[in-house]
Amino acid sequence: MKHLLVLLPLLLLLGLFSCEPRDEVITSDPSAMLEFSGDTVLFDTVFVSRGSITKRLRVYNRNEKAVRISEIALGGAAASPFQLTINGVQSPRANNLELRGGDSLYVLVKVNINPTDENLPFLVSDSILFRTNGQQQNVKLVAYGQNAYFHRKGAIGTTVWENDKPHVLLDSVLVREGATLTIQKGSHIYGSSKAVLLVNGQLLVEGTPEERVTFSGYRREEAYQTAPGQWEGIRILTRSGGNEIRYADIMNTVYGLRIGNPGKPGTLVEGCMVAHAFLDGIVAFTSEVQVRNTLIYNCGQYGFGGLGGGNYEVLYSTIVSYNNQLVRETPLFVVTDFIPGTDIANQPTTLRLSNSIVYSDSHAMVDEVLLSPLSAATEVSHNLLRTSVYMDQLQDKENKLNVEPKFGEPAKFDFSLDTLSPASGAAQYLPDLPTDLKGETRSTTLPDMGALERTTD
Image 1 (spheres, rainbow, N blue to C red):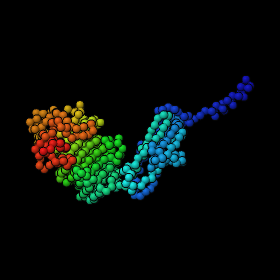
Image 2 (cartoon, rainbow, N blue to C red; image 1 turned 30 degrees about the horizontal axis):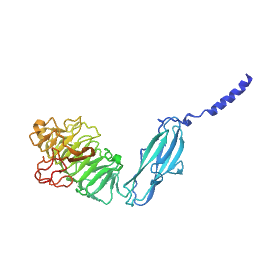
Image 3 (spheres, one colour; image 1 turned 90 degrees about the vertical axis):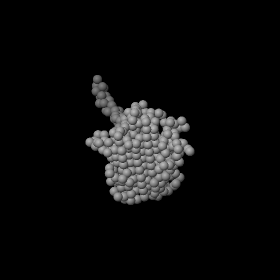
Image 4 (spheres, rainbow, N blue to C red; image 1 turned 180 degrees about the horizontal axis):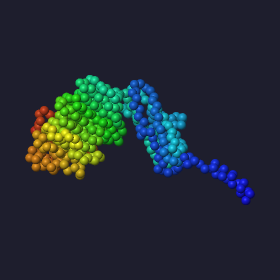
C-alpha cells in the first residue's frame, strides 16, 4: 500500500504528459476537408512589361482535429508559370504537412509572365492541388497572359475601343450621357464577375459578318464556354438613345441586353447571337427595339421580352431553347403592356413579328409565346411558333404552329435548318434584309424563316 501511494503521483504526472491535445490528434476521416480564402487566385494587375506579382492564399483546417496534407502541388508542376512558397520554401510541391485543428497556413503564389508574348493565351491558368485523407481539392490560378485594355469601375466619355488588344471589364463601366462608345469590328470584350457595361449615352458596336465582336466571361476553359452568369451584361439606361449593336456575340451573362429608355430613339440589334444568359437574352421596358437576323438561345427566362409597353420589331430571328440546363418558368417570347410586379400597366404597345422561329424542346412549357394584349400584335406572320393559346388567332397568317423546326444539330447549338425543315422556304422576302446572320444572301423567292438561311435561288 505504501508503494502504491508513492507511485500514484508519478503515474498521474506521466498521464498528463501523455495526453495529446485534441487539436494535435491527426484524423484520417475523409470528410475532414480543407477550406480556402477563395476558390480562385486572380491576378488582375495591368501587365505592361515582364514582371512578377505575388498573392496570398490562406488554407484553413476548420476541424477539431489535425489533418495531414499529403501533398500540395501545382497542376502544371515545373512547367507552370506560377510558383508556390509553402512554409517559407519555394517549390512546386510540398508533402506531408500537418495542420492543427482550427489552424491555418499561407501559400504564397507568384506569377511571372511576359504580356507581349503573342504566343501566350489570353489567360494563363493552373491549379493548386491539395490531397488530404485520400480526397483532392483544388484552387484555380488565373492571370492575364497577354497585354490588354483593362477597364476598372468608372465613367467614360466619347471613346473608341480598338480591336488590337482584348478589353477586360473588371467592374461597372458607365458611358456618360451625351458620350458615344464605339467598339470596332473584331473586338473581344471579356467580363469579370462584377462587370457590367452601362450605357447612358450611345453604344455603337461595329461588328461585321466576317469580323464579329464578342462579349463573354473572362474564363476561357472549356467548362466555362456555356456557363451562364459569369458577368452582368449590357444595360441601356434611361438617357441613352440611338444604339446600334451589329454582328456581336453576347455570351455567359446574367442578362444579355437589358434596355430601359422610354421615349428615346430606339436600339437596333442586327446579326447578333445572344446565348447562355442566366436570366434574359434581350429584355426591354417601355422602349423601342428592333431585332433582325438574330439568334437567341438557352436563356433562363425570356429569350426576348418587351414589357410595360413599347414598340418592338423582330424579323428573321431564331429564339429557342434546346438542351437547356437552366430551368425556365417563363415563355421564350413575351410582349406585354404591363411589367409584372409593378403598377405599370396598359401602356401603348406594338409588335411586328415576322419570318421568325420561337420554339423549344421543353416538356414544361407548352406555350412559348405570350402577347398581352393580343391587339398589340399589329403584324405576326410567316413565323414558326410553339403556342396553344393563340392557335385560332395566328394559324391563318402564314404561320406554322407547333411543328418541330428540324434544326441541324441543336445539341451542339447548331440552329441552321435541316433540309426537311418546315421553316425552309416559308418566309416572305423583305428587300431591306437581303442577307442573314452570317452575311449569306437570302433567297428572293423562297427565303427561310429564322436567322440562318439555307435556301438558295
